[in-house]
Image (cartoon, rainbow, N blue to C red; front, side):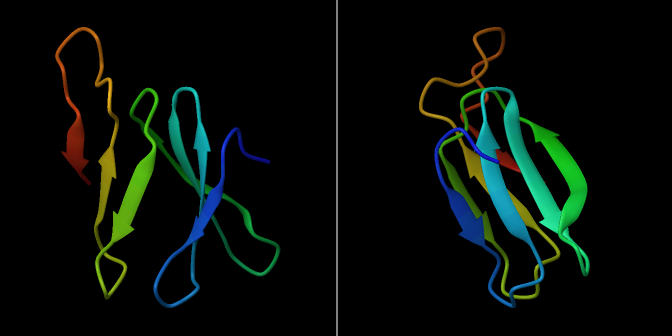
Length: 72
């Protein structure tokens, strides 16, 4: 389930879905939820080629500290 759209990682290991509170990664044989990243209103994700890192972007940022771009 997602509130906007979904994005596959480069090697197809993860499926990222976007939600009001951030991004969720789904993985494994049944694609169960693997990890959540708190980044309110995130609208973009980019995976590193080896899938060890991700970058998320929110055009509004967290209203408390304006983190628009986060490297995880």
